[in-house]
Image (cartoon, rainbow over all chains, first blue to last red; front, top):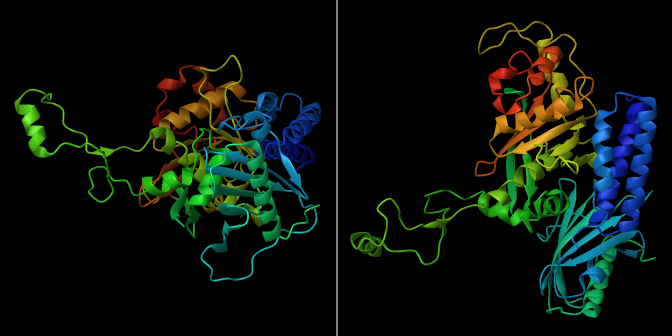
Length: 195
Length: 270
C-alpha cells in the first residue's frame, strides 16, 4: 500500500497530467491552475521528504516551463483567436485546430465526476467500433458540413478527431460554426448535456 | 481501419521476463491521438505514417515507395557511358522513411502499451522530460513514467529466481535477490528504435544528476521498437544490482564511453 508521501507524489503527477490535458484542449487557465496545484503538492512532498525528493524536483522544474497552451499556429484564420481559446459545452471542454483549408483536428476533454461515459450498444457497423478501452466512430455529418473519424478514450476521458470539412474554410465565423457543430454532434453521440 | 499487432516482451536488462499475452493491438487513430497528445515532435497523423512504414521494405518491390522521375536502366547506362553519372552512384529508386517521424513511434507505442496494463484502464501518469534552461546540451531521457504497469512482470520474475535457481543458458547460479528492490513510483524512460546503449547512457546521465540518494538511482525503462512487420516492442526494465558499484562507475564521469558490459554485476540482466 502506498504511503502518505507516495499519495502526495501521485497527486502531484496527477495534477501535472491534468494540466497537460487542459493545455492540449486549449484551456490555458485550467492548465495554469493545475500546474499551480502540482507545485503545491510538490512543495508539500518536499517538506516531508527533505533530501529525498529528486523524482519530483525534476517535475517541478518542468512544471514551471511547461506550455500552458499548445499549437499556436495554423491557417490564415486569426490564429490567436481561433486556436488558443478553449470552448465549453456542458461538461466538455474542446477546441478545433485547423490544419490547412479543409482539414482540422478536434480535441475535447470531458469532466464527468460521477456518471460514467456511455458505451455503444453492440453493433456490426464497421464505422462504429468499441474495443481496447476506446470507442471509434465515423460521422458523415451533412448538416454540420464535416466528416470526422472520432476516438473516445475512456482512460483519460478525451475525444480526438480528424475532421475533413465539406467546404473550404477561410474565415473565423465559419470556423466557429463548424467547431460548434462538431461539439454538438459529439455531445449528442455521447449523450452529454449541452448545459 | 489500420490495426497493428505488436508482440510485447518485457526484459530485465537484456534477459527476457515475460512475453505479453495477448499482444498489443492498436489502430492508426489511437496512434494519431497519442502522437497529438504525447509525441515529442510535431507530426500530424502519426498513425498513417506507422501504417505505411510498417510495410516498408528496402529493395522490396512490394513495399518500396517509388520516387518520381526515376531513370530507366537504359538511360542510366547512357549517363554512365557519357560520364554524366559518377561511377559509384546510381539513380535512387524509392523514398525512405523519415527518421524524425519514425523516432516518435517508440514513445507513442510504449505509452499505449503501458496504458493497456493500467488497472481499470486508468490513465498512465507520465510526462516528457527536456533539459531545463541553461542545460540544453545535456542528454536527457524522454520520459518520467509510472512504474506501476511493470510491477506484475517484475514481481513474477524476481520471485521465480528467489528459490535459488540456475540460469538455463549459462548455468550460473541465479543472481536474483531473495528480496527484490521495490520499483520506485516513477522512473526515467527512454524510447529508441534500436540504439539500446545510447538509451542506457542517457539513463546513466540522469542517475549522475540525481545522485545515489535518489529513489530512482539505477532504475529506468528502455523501450526498443521494431515497427516494420512483424512489429515488436521490447520493454527493458533497468534495476540496480549493486548501487555502490554503480555510483563508482558513474563517478568516473565519461558516460559516453560506457558499454553494456560496463554494467555487468551492477544492473540486473547484463
